[in-house]
Length: 367
Ligand SMILES: [Zn+2]
Image (cartoon, rainbow, N blue to C red):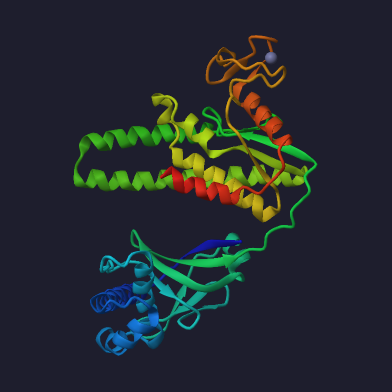
């Protein structure tokens, strides 16, 4: 399974200047290659190469391989859309391959730059160390908020699919981030506290409305997104590990159900950004696939208003966000747990299938 590994580079001030210069020359060259191709109505690597390669090397001072990559950037853009001539941002991502980038030991990367090769250290924790041997082929160099990152493609082996003997239903809820059918709650308490904190600060800064306030606002949003991402990684990891340890498939609602519920009521809409739900769901899906744990997707209709004991379905069963009390049999239970049990029950009668493909398609539809 192909995933992206992000490495943060730690260049010296001089190396940083050289990388920026390289990025700028590269993007100018890519824009030039696009212009040549667009004017002559040729859009392929070979034909643009024939027209622009020598001039690119002379005018922008790129190495042979970097010139090829710059042309490739224009070509990739034409593959999506031939109707416009692209102009690339001076500090847009640039692509390295094995001829211009190599790893030296565990903590240093050697990269081509305008004035010669640079040896640049990068941040390497346990996570990166474990995966570094699996980096394949190309890497994108990106510059964000004053920092350089290498986005490397890695190929991770998928676990042999387990033959599940059990099924765990997982409800992605409003009060709790996730609740499973065994009653385990993956709480959003910390998330909720922090979200309130961020929301207050955002509101304050919104009122101020100055340029520096907007900058700080963007910073806060980024920090918050980062926090949610970490939480989603943590929770999805726990859910998948539990399923694997208990020989279980994981049952989730089909996407339409989650979207409907995230957008139900206005005051709650703010409580969780919809994307955070979708992210958690996609994390569960891909981690499950890596671990060989099947994911079953079930129809979300009525999972929150049906009694998981007697099957009675009525809107009034759901007293409020947190409580479920069956109007027929009197069964009283946490609403998220009731939903998780229903999700599990629906999955048990359905054949397990790995849900990653659907999850990705669904994310796209969601806009
Ligand atoms: Zn009942």
